[in-house]
Image (tube, rainbow, N blue to C red; front, side, top):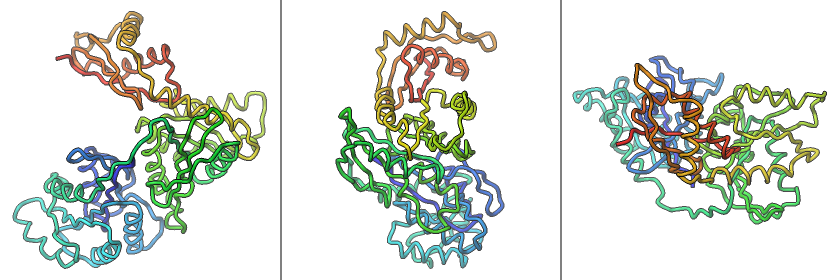
Length: 436
């Protein structure tokens, strides 16, 4: 089930990114005291009162040369399209401005739950400055300080009240997958080709991402899949199409709902920065991953063309060395039959469990090959390992000191586990925990 989504909107320089970072729990946007500097991550996950949610910083959606007021208006419209709850951030220092009033009018008409957060209330004396914000017609203004984290609990308490309490029934036997990638890599053509490849379409079902229709079908092996529609999730008009970050955000929504993600590259254009960014999101989210190079029929080939392209992919996506690569053509149907088989294999690896006795044998053998590291005269000791989760496979290793488990040694242990069990197509998480 997709998490409920909170969008943060407001005019520039009211502290949206600071609030976003506080709620997300980490510094993931660039924050400076200059309007329009948010250039980094705009989508994250947070948790409050046991409820997970997604959060969008609309200020990070660059709308090019749009006039100032139009930018704010369009960002508010994006929030309305994407969010279940909207937080409008204003600033106590400047008071109510024309831009605040314009955004408030747009949000009021949307009928979405809107929470008004008045930022930069850094001390109790400033609380008297917020009463003029009642004039925006959005109910009670909440005084907050993004830089100090004050008042955000009250805002999140109110947001959680508006989350749906419906529980979506999940059938674990059905594999959910999506195709992500830049515009024009051929996602729509691949979707049509996959569904036209002797598949039995079970149903078209309304997706939880707005304007999306998911398609269920059964492969020749009898496995049922649900294909999450990302190609249909782009809005018309230059406002949405002109921004790379908006398409990244939509891909994130699809990744969130998928078991396995097909990262589609355009063989003609090669690898772009946005490809790496979107694939990084899927990796961080712990989803199964297959790299699909589409339009392979349009590439002039020599003896080592495929091998060279694969080498380039491995160099550019070093953190995805576990992901299988398949070269296909939606137009000629070349190798398309391999995709359902690969998705099924990756899903199986995502759900694989290793018995603790076997896992500990692998870890002890690894230590014998490459002894644990030392730091300032203290050696890392590994006592015991166990698998605690699937999707992705997650292993807890009990040690004497977590700090002694260096990233490079954790990576070595991961490689030894992969040698024994492959885990093709799925990331692995290794967590060092001090033994009590």
